[in-house]
Amino acid sequence: MFVGTVKEVKNNENRVGLTPESVQELVGHGHTVLVETGAGGGIGATDEVYRAAGGEIVETAGEIFDRAEMIVKVKEPQPVERAMLRDGQILYTYLHLAPDPEQTRDLIRSNAVCIAYETVTDAFGGLPLLKPMSQVAGRMSIQAGAGALETAKGGRGVLLGGVPGVLPATVVIIGGGVVGFNAAQMAAGLGADVTILDRSPAVLERLSTHFEARAKTAFASQANLMNSVIAADLVIGAVLVPGAEAPKMVTKDMLGQMKQGGQRRPSTWPMTPVLHRGSRLVVMIKCVTRRLLFLVRYRLPSALWQVASERNGRGVFHLREGEVGRPRCNGRVS
Image (cartoon, rainbow, N blue to C red; front, side):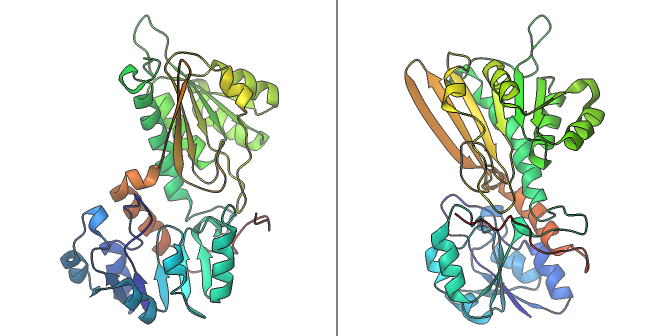
């Protein structure tokens, strides 16, 4: 099979669909791999490195779309890329269709076979291709949040783990899935006062058994959610509804009652987060200083391009035959 990967054209996207390691793996199994020149620049992989791995360097994305039977990307195809898809061609990438009806219509018109990483399941109903980016996003959300709490960045001047004689920061994580679990591990490891909210008794029991006294768990009722968010120094949103938009868990009323001062509120969007539509791996930091509101948003995994690309590549191509099930979603596209 002719497999191609192109340079990502979405703004601030530094990852690449195929790392040199993935190219070598595919070539070793008899496939021909086409790589757009400069595709690996964001992760520090030069064209020479890709050639050494067995890839064929191609000058333009258009040529790759013309020749390749399967296109492997990271982010959803942009309009210029969707226009190059053809009947029967396989597109393998994150799609995030729920908040993007225009993309959905374009993909349907192309008659390409479009496989969304975020909906592929394993034999146990898990999401093995989404999991790597969720792990990165969950861990980085605490790293980003800790920095946002610094006074120089408009934060409340709180140290997550505190110091002897000073209480640690209160971290609330909404959602106990892969993102929430990894965020909790980081926050608890730094010594923060961590509470995880979820609606699944099984998830809450698993988290309680794992973290023991290092983190508290609570059912995500409206009352618990309100009380926890209001008391928090840092709130991480990690709610997933496969194939659909994320529910809006944090209301404007809750935000208005949060601690005053240079407060920053990171909210991570790994499969679908609060205050954001769709399954985006993004962080939003809300900084309220007196009467001013500042918003900062960026895709977490893309900020750690090398780790994210390597982890994603291994997750995609190291699945053994029989491990992948049917794509999972709730059938709603808005």
